Image (cartoon, rainbow, N blue to C red; front, side, top):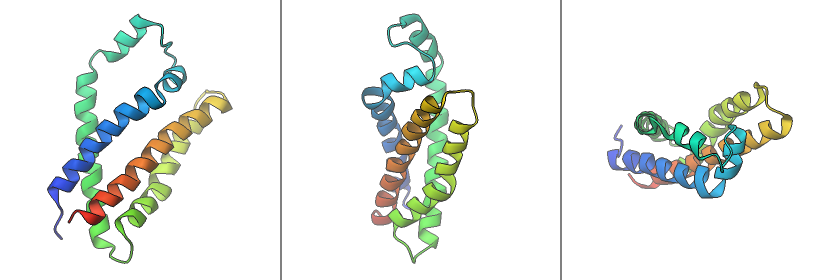
Length: 138
């Protein structure tokens, strides 16, 4: 099997960019409430930002691995398009995992749903994008 390394790298860069927009301008205020940080609390925000560089590097490497495995999966299952493959992976593995982590905490039902919808929605958009890129950029 041949995997397009540039497509894998592009997907990983896209994930970081989408995450910045998703958890920033789109849902940043709601996400800060979910994780217990007030937007006006500058000290708490600065504390959250300490050591974030290492987290971004770690997340990027994990995403590279995730996309690489997805690329092999897509390459191996020829009966479905890249998007179909990515949606199956999201529906069977990503969405239940995100749902479980949102359900099994001490948050209120409203906060659990918000957490699930924000994280699950991000992953859905991400995996559809991965499927598009990996399916067509061969």
